[in-house]
Image 1 (cartoon, rainbow, N blue to C red):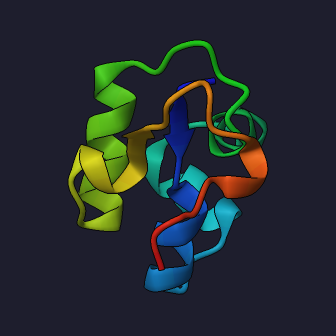
Image 2 (image 1 turned 135 degrees about the vertical axis):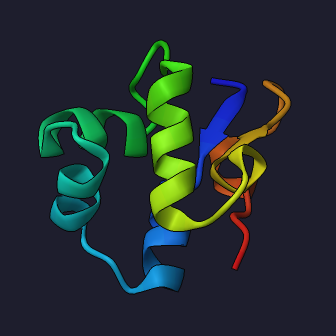
Length: 79
């Protein structure tokens, strides 16, 4: 998929668990896991805004475009 999701990077930076983020955003941990693992087909802007508010970041800190012809092993996430 050409959109990579870096929620786990922001969770590590904020020293926050998936459960805590889900509770603060108001979504289930299962739905957050689907988004976090890149299996979501869509994300509501209200959910994205809530994630950004709680994680104190910009949408670009959570989502990035990766060309489809790049093998998954070569996709480097932000530190």
